[in-house]
Length: 118
Image (cartoon, rainbow, N blue to C red; front, side, top):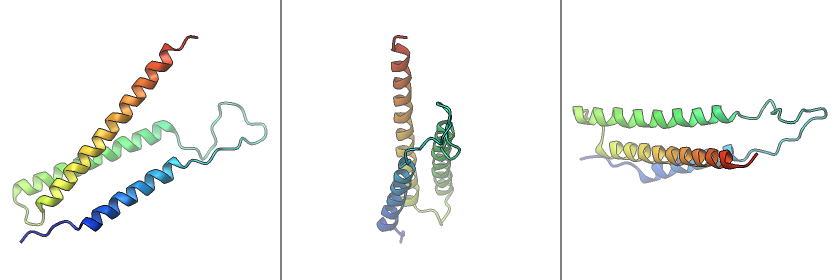
């Protein structure tokens, strides 16, 4: 008999991912120290490009994991269940679609900025 994925485990993973997203989005407003120059970023503020690269790497890792599980299942690995493969595949798809939406928003924001009169 095939063991089915525990739905509560999947829900726990979704909730933990949501809490990570909420923690990352809760950036406290930074207070400029006396004598700070405009345009200078605080030392503890995350760099946008680093955050974007980390998100892209996370999506890539999710896709690699899903691909590896699929290949293991196709090769007949008895420890890999079809439900694991399908869940990993769906996670990969959702992550890629979300990253595509972020890319689309960045492109449209760039285009809007370029249309602004100087």
